[in-house]
Length: 261
Image 1: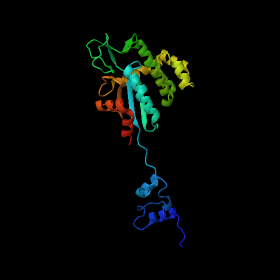
Image 2: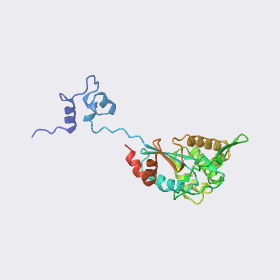
Image 3: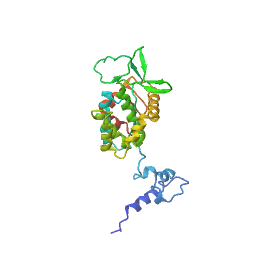
Image 4: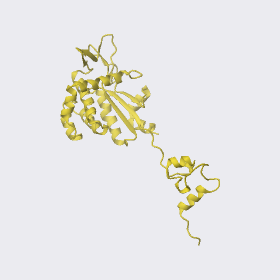
């Protein structure tokens, strides 16, 4: 019986066989052709290197523009966005949170139209800008009152202090799913991010940093194209359409899995 020939040797022989060789000018020996994607490309033998890892697909980029006290925003963040984030590997989904919401509010309470639970951007000739310059300082007026302004700024300062998304997102989930967005920070930090200093977050909220963060969120929100008409306002890979919004709200996990390629 003829001695067995190792499969690796047969593979190398096939690669080096006449008509199956590397491209002219390939300076790498045959046993190195499949050692990396760069070498395989240089020797033009990628199709004969099935073991090479495929380049990773870019993550789906989702941005959520929201208000901390908007019921529909809280529902989407708690019941759709957070569970999807937990289920997917981090290389599949990149999330940006922008707590600011509707850039203008009515001078009187708006009437709810239809059955939509979204927090709509009011349309009226009598509008009060949400961001105002009062005696040289920026002041914010929010659709759901001063507590929402505080909640928006707390979450913006939390992101600023934590830096890492996987650190601050569970805390925001805790705040938005609890009984009070503005009163449960200490408890949520103890559970999800005990390494964070609540004092630094409070200092941010009470100081110029919090105002600067909210001003930045105002600019980012106002720069949306098309302009947002309600919150939660969702962009996927930098785009917003009615179809993408509906798909994200109906089955965010399915949408991300479909788009990730």
